[in-house]
Image (cartoon, rainbow over all chains, first blue to last red; front, side, top):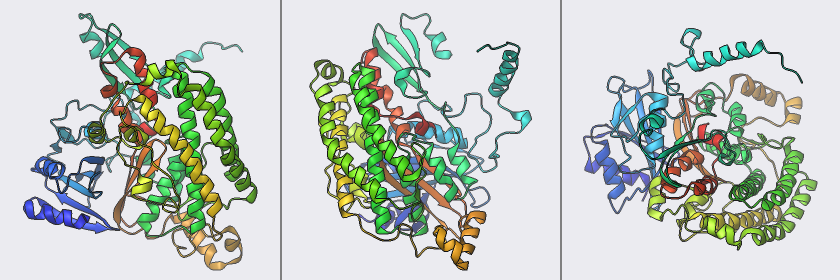
Length: 179
Length: 398
């Protein structure tokens, strides 16, 4: 099935939930509201004519100052049987920074959602084990947000773990290392 | 250390394996809850190698991100470069010339061989068959020497470019590579003699880490890890890129989805990769190696820069300002790297730098399935399971 047809089916079934559809280089992305997102994903997964059984990718996106809703969670879905793919974007506002977890539908979303929470601070309701995954547990801030500096936090907000390492290295300097 | 505290008053034993364990191929930490020798619960911890490649690439131009992709999966860096270049080319709407496509296919398959070889070597070493390790590094060395001849680097190659490759291949390179392909099949026989029907090997791999086809799809596995369960999903066949639609190869599939089936899949893939290289050398067309009709995106040839005003200007602007006028849009392009599906999701806002670049790393997904494969098995089978999913932690943490 052509991806635009999939978008059309979604528009017919959930007319109030679709915000926007766009196409670029043959790939179609559908932006949806987050309230019924889990229902829509279940429909995409279970409907025999669509059967999007493979979650290729799940990631966050920060549209700071570009769109009304600041964040989006981007899902890339693929169907092993019908060989079609589609990109679904769930709009997430900054005030209510949470979406429903899709782990009940695709269990492989587990770590992707943890990474998205780690990097963007988007919460996933119903996730079995929502913790930071790549950054240390006591890290402050969410690095992939656009207002997070690329060179890292300022000196006062330095991660305490790094300061510990620096002090430890000072301590070791007093030893004389022989060859 | 909540987990350790909670379990102190039970009879189960909590074992922290890694991050420096030799079988984890990098820095992966597993917290295992054991009942005797049986695994009750397994919690992987990753992130030790997190370097923020996604954040870094937002501050760099499209060209300067290529060396970053080397550092993800450092034992198959060429495939990462190719995957990134294919994605950016699709975003710009340009196409590499035929010869460049063939060269890229060759180097991708060479990487597949060297990556799978290091996989079978370490996997066998972990399980206890040491000899394979010593033999297989002989072939890997040969391939790395060829890489060195091609581009001067052995590991972090940065050879492909957006719209082509950096430099043309020499006839000497093609000749010695052809000699390699002719000998490689007999080398494969050697490995298979060593382990294929070895009783200890069969006992350690058959019926371990079984995952069904439906479950493997639901987990999002890819590459040989998915095909071992019998799912016919190979991006080289389904969305052909470079020269994969012009060569003939078969995609091996497993039946039971255990460690042994995945091992067999990769062994057949090795032979197929060898076949692909051979066909590419035989069919290799003549012509340019950089897309000549896209001066706004690709670096002009050095001799043109020195003699032609227009090319000098393009070169200057590309280096100083980065890409000119990348079209606004978003794209997800996946390629089949040795580990599985490597996807690049690039969002462009029309400037010379990516607005967002997401890397869908196969190792990240595969590491997450480790508890599913290990629970219920013995402690020693965890080693076999880490080997069979073929992860590189540099790619997992990015």
